[in-house]
Image (cartoon, rainbow, N blue to C red; front, side, top):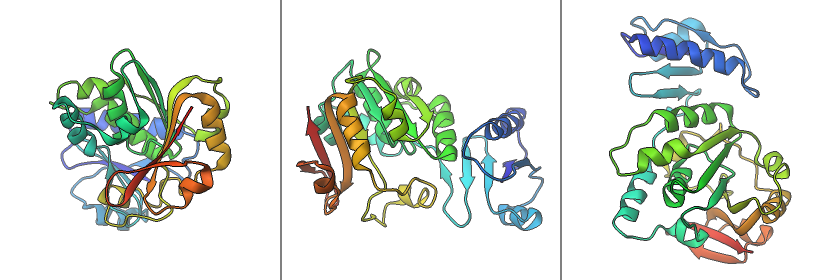
Length: 265
């Protein structure tokens, strides 16, 4: 993988490039060689052709972008979290927070964080007295998530602070759950890659092929039921058979294609 900058990089970009190389070299699950290359005046296709390498990690002045083969660029952005938090500030109800019955001061485990949109809303809802732990098994997604949560600035009241409070771990969620004590989180949440994809979702297109595509296991749900004090929630396609397979008998339709399965303890 090539690590480079935007054109005419600032010193802080060059320093971040060096830090990212060191971090990648120490991260489990990242395969292949990684090297820093000067951007000069090369376009990204020219860099790929010149170095015979398809994957590029680009440090721009605003963010880190990951280009994987022919997939759209992947980068951290709070996405729908910003809209949802604005609605919460206006006194409106958030569907996931409502079904999960999240309260101020709660501890929440997001087992499949992706790029963190739900984790951010959880963190905003539980507030300073609560705790959100976000797990992501993909090393590069976790790298983007961790950096984004630590550097993104929002002008929405309380959102930047909510992002900074999320604790991220690059790990398999089943392995993590097996290490937790009984009843150690109020809410455990799963948002696996849908068995029936929603192809028009632009946010999912950028991570498809990189995210863990495995179906959620019965063992993981069993561990979640042991670890959770109050609620286990799963997000899936409304027509998915996963709700019945995994024992989520309480199902709430959110939008035309998304639903939440809930197990209350």
